Image (cartoon, one colour):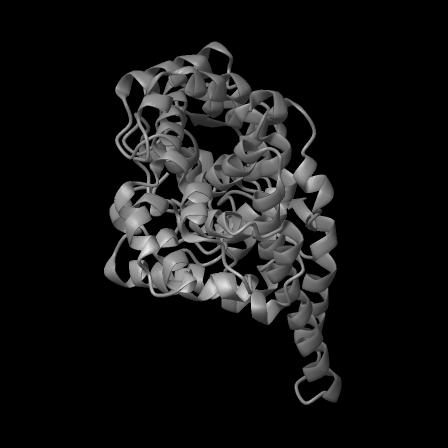
Length: 423
């Protein structure tokens, strides 16, 4: 697995997705259309065209993400994409920004998930998707040129989530004063649909800031990058990231020794993520604890499609309406609308968040409806159970599937089973 991570990102090469420069034109078109005068007959048509383009980009991003997960020779990389997308959760607050979460994955997460955590952290923090989501562009230093003229002030959203969720973790030894100082340090970061990322010096708080006892001075991005590097290297960050990795990949309540070993690998290598993943994979707890995790809806859908041997191109080329009916709408019913987590803390890990009566019902309905949408002839029940679950397909499941009234029902029994819903 680690050898593949060291190599090129084959799935991204085979199934490319737009990056920030590719999605900006549609955002610019929508913004330009909104600026047309009311009553202009061109305005309605321009708005419609821009909205269609943006929605198409969003649907394409979802289809390709599933296609990559189905066809990639490097499944661990795809799982890491999902993990880091949840750790650095963003969502589009308005239609104009709908393609930004996908651009964040392509620009920041995929290129850096096998490098150093400090590089990943900087790439994500400075990406327009994060800046737009946490409204960092509205944050203005009180003593800056704009702050003095317009009376505007700080927005602490990015500073708080950076420390609480992305690095140190909830309950770490930092104060409100540290958050405020970090917020002052981050002033100037912005996003413009024409230029992309911008640094607005007139909005930046002048002077030095002190965060966690370290003084940062200078202008522009240099002190911000220095602070991000220092946050990435702290022991609290190492423990927070180690805990989240173990909780995501192994168990909701991971072995403390596993967390400690992963943390030490993080600190010893200054956040070399390949070494961190290696420590996770080398620990016995990663292999002795079996099927303790409930598959999140994206993972569940991918596993179901794979069990039926659905090819990547079958999903990657789905028309938008069919993609919505077969994948996106069911995922929403299961509790995981595409690229729309409930907040900056991302998707929950605990089983209880996913296996509720309405969400389990959505899984059962999908298990009934999806297979015949992709396959006219369904596999023999025993073969499907073995293909989908291997040694985890128990005698009771084999018996129930063999006694089902139809192959459709048998397929649904396998895909909706407790065994298949866990990993």
